[in-house]
Image (cartoon, rainbow, N blue to C red):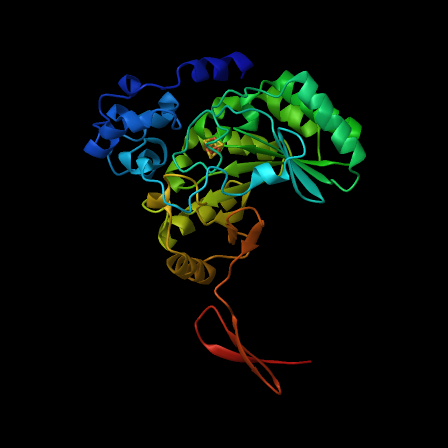
Length: 354
Ligand code: SF4
């Protein structure tokens, strides 16, 4: 598949309400988003035609993820434009360096689809565009001077919105600076625009191994035949693929749905890596799941899934202290002989101290 195929798919992306399929009868709440003055300055509508066709039913989880509603107008006092405090950890405009061993580079502000709960909507689809030659050269110098950086995450926006040439320039520059660096390429494109996974792309990514592809899939409905084929092509090319899911009310806040998603991913040779509690981004309260309920869902998943299929449930501490894994606690007590552990079946068991 040539680069021109996904480019023409991209050119047909729906960015205006009038471009949505007729069968997608908008609800009052959805319609209000497009007509109210508050819409100005918010993350715009962006849906690839293939995704739009799959969300005709008013209640589909795809529709909730990608069609805006007036609920986005309500910003709570503790919701922040930069909920993870990324700007405080940015030594260069596009580089986020919070942990000594890894850094994240915002290679473009463009995505193939706009997710209504995006925690980085302050940057997404802004005026930044793709990383410039000068910015990349500054990043190369920074990486050369910081020998502790072992991993570089290419993110944005969506890293695979860049063409192969631009992507190769970034990967090559980082490798020159730090020859042993491990890459992670963060993208939704294999699922929302599977034509992006060309033979040329898989060759390019493979040539820059060690390189991990980091997906975001939130509902099993996203894994149609084309997406499954694209994920198969990545795995066949020898690229390790991991997935991050965001826990979203009305989309996947159900152990059964997540069980289906994670087992489907494992079948497609994708390791479920993280399940994230929704971040405190502006206008996203309607997507967040109460933490106690979220832990209940995680406990249920633990009972149903193998270690391979079970992701780590984590919450990003608001303001930028990083992510913390959260577990329904298994260690419930101790005495002079040892510990009391609660197993996945809910029963208590003794475990010796030594
Ligand atoms: S693909 Fe990622 S960066 Fe783009 S809108 Fe969705 S969550 Fe945000």
